[in-house]
Length: 251
Image 1 (cartoon, rainbow, N blue to C red):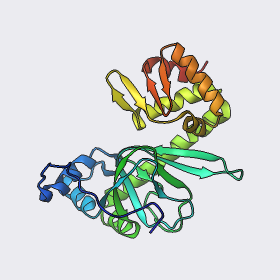
Image 2: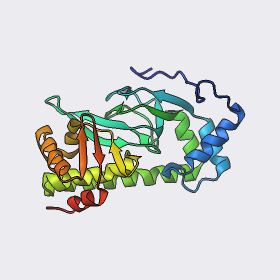
Image 3: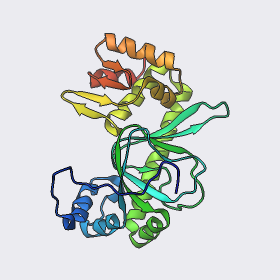
C-alpha cells in the first residue's frame, strides 16, 4: 500500500441521511456518463464498469501516490482537484498538470504497469472512483469504447502539454499566465455568483506557468487594480472572464 493512500471506503451519505444502497451503482453510472471517459458508453455498461471500482475520499493536501511508486490503482476524480508534479535536480517542484472532476489521475490505464513518473497530491478535498490497475486494464479490454475514450483523453492531454510548451517557449509571462487561468476556469474553477474561484496559490500558478512567484504576484496585483481578478492567499477570484480572455491573446 502506498504512503498516504488508504483504501478504507467512507460512506457516501451525509450524517443523518438514509440512502437506498442498492441504487448507488446506478446513480454513479448516470453521474459519470457526462465525463469524456464514458462518452458514448451505454448506461448498462457504465454500471458494470463503475461497479468494479471503490469510492475513495481524500483530504486536502493528501498524497495519492509518489513518483517511483508501483502503479497499483487507476483513479478517476469525481470532485475536487489534484496536482501532478515532478521535482527537478535542484529540488524545485514543477506542476505538470491539474486534474479536475472527470479526469484520470496519473497513468491512463492503457498499460498500467511499472512505476509512477510523477507525484499526485490533492489541492482540495476530493472524491474518486478507484480501480485495481490490472482490473481496469481487463475492463478496458472488455469494453472497447472505454479503451477508445482513454486513448482520446491521452490525445487531448498531449495536445494541452504541447500548447503549454509553446506558450512557455514563445510568449511573455502575462499572456501565458492569463491563458493558464482561462484553462483553469473550466478545469477546476468553481462558480460563485457571477465570479469564478480558482483554488490555487500564487506559488502553484508560478509552477504551472514556468515563472517566478514575484512575477505572478506582480501581474495579479495589476489585474486586481483593473478589476479583472481578486488575488487571495491560496485562491484567485476571476471577476471579469472576458477581460482575462483578452489578456490571453497577448499584449
